Picture 1 (cartoon, rainbow, N blue to C red):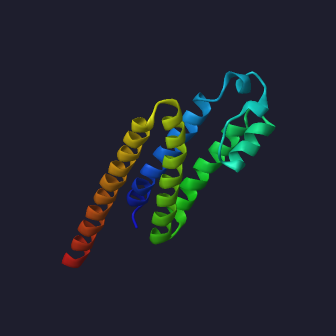
Picture 2: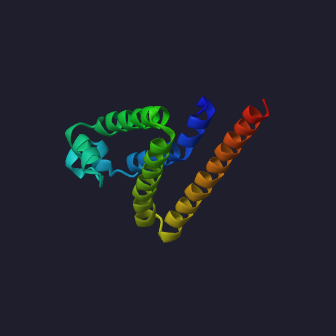
Picture 3: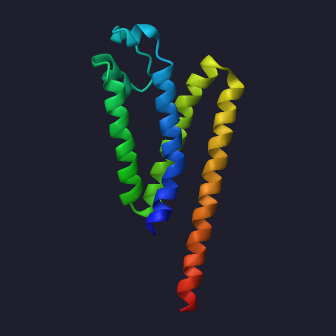
Length: 141
């Protein structure tokens, strides 16, 4: 699989992850940012652990997770990478949707899910067309 194809496949998962991370950071209560680590609000037990142990915990775990998504998405075999990246997309779409629905309402969460679904489909379509054209070129040789 070409490098470009692998990178493209990561776009929806990384987008959903970044959005979830950003909304989690932005919507933390002021008390948390003022030093009351017990005021941190995170549903993921791993993220919550990091947040409740240091003010920079959310940033440390987020950077680690984004790097891990990139490494696994790039180096896993194509089928495993696709499964992993789909899982990441679904998990972070769910995580962000809890923030969106609680803070802004149901339809914001649904719009976010729709956007992610369209992005996933469009990227998948681009990748499949690229793979198909590669096959056609190699068959014509």
